[in-house]
Length: 241
Image (cartoon, helix red, strand yellow):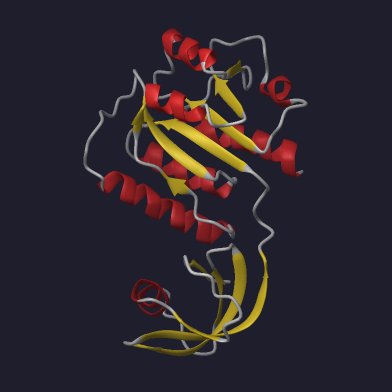
């Protein structure tokens, strides 16, 4: 069923009019018509089943038929500190990470990033739209935020707010991800993923000094666009399945 997200709390309203952007998406993009149903996820994360009553140039008016809890979100946060990769690789990382349950993505410019920092916010806007579409497709109860890019040093400082910080690194051959998370508070996790060339030893040491656990996630070296979703899948298995 079609899913859209709004910031307001619908509460106990029976009739609700969508804003111009969502109305355009339903009428012009999806070509939905009166009588069709959709799900509106509101600010508090509630799913509201609605039927389109009217759809015209003035907007879409819906009648709400059911309000229920969203069961697709886990308790707690998982924040991905993703080194910015080139072109479609970053797009793919964001899309798949949202599907797998990430709550926030922080683009990071680490030392070996091929892509150079830019003050143009258009990339962040486009990445946020990719997150929105992935959230719609995967039945999320939130649209994960894609933050403004930051330097590696800033990202390490930001990660100190997390209860558990993981640092997958190809040079770590002792501690596995499974060992690092056993018996620990999993309610607020942050993890770092390196760029195409990987993290430097200095970056790994900086993260470790800030409390991150250097871990291995397997015997093979994964591409940057594969590593983030792989870690999320491992965490999902541990916390949800």
